[in-house]
Length: 181
Image (cartoon, rainbow, N blue to C red):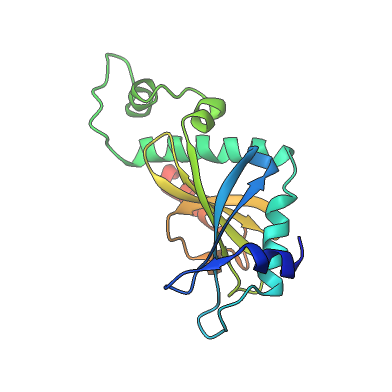
């Protein structure tokens, strides 16, 4: 998709955000996309925004496995660090109780119980980033991070993308450290 084609289908709102909907082959669905221009730049589609949208349109099917694995990791992490008020059965761990209650037992379940809500595109960083906003099977709202056309990690909604400039696994490493404690 060219910059001109993207500009032609983008509607800018009162908050200076660009809004459109595109069919994303990876998810086999049309998804709302929100363009976030750099604060000091004119309200317009940029070359970088067009490149990021093309990254999204060209995500390969093998990335769906990565999405499923990240959503499974998110469930396991959420159920490890938070208490949703689930009562444990005898011999059952805290995490096992939550997985039972939420009816999630693997990456496929984590994906099927999640909903892709929208995608945010930001052009303020050196690298190309998109955030795939997901309501997860564990009832959290997260961002799957797309960096330069690859789904690399996840973070809470509103995650600071600058953390990923130097280290694509920055938050993954933080989660592993918490789980090791």
